[in-house]
Amino acid sequence: MLTGQKKVLVVDDDHDIREIIMIILESEGYAVSGLDNGHAVIETIQQVRPDILLLDVQLGDMDGRVGIPGMLTRLFRGKLTSLRTGGMMQPML
Image 1 (spheres, rainbow, N blue to C red):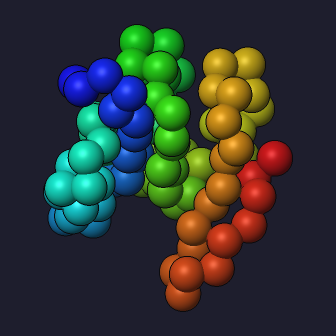
Image 2 (cartoon, rainbow, N blue to C red; image 1 turned 60 degrees about the vertical axis):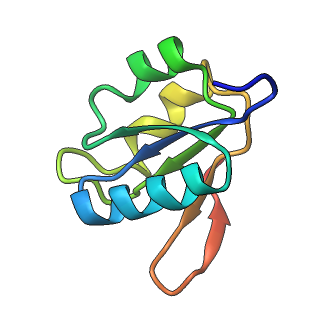
């Protein structure tokens, strides 16, 4: 990772969407990590310490709008925003 390079964690259970997002972000100079489920989010945030978290709100194993935001407030100090189909964004917290 380059000095000053922003770290992004992409969490999406759709492999193709996750990979496309990761490729785009990497091409823009971000250091990107990806997960395919919500169960490892907390542990990965503790290890990676991302600057940006992109979280699918409808993960196959959990609803990203319900369980995860409460846990994240203790670990992730950035602003959490959900991106929904159609490009509508709304704050999660």
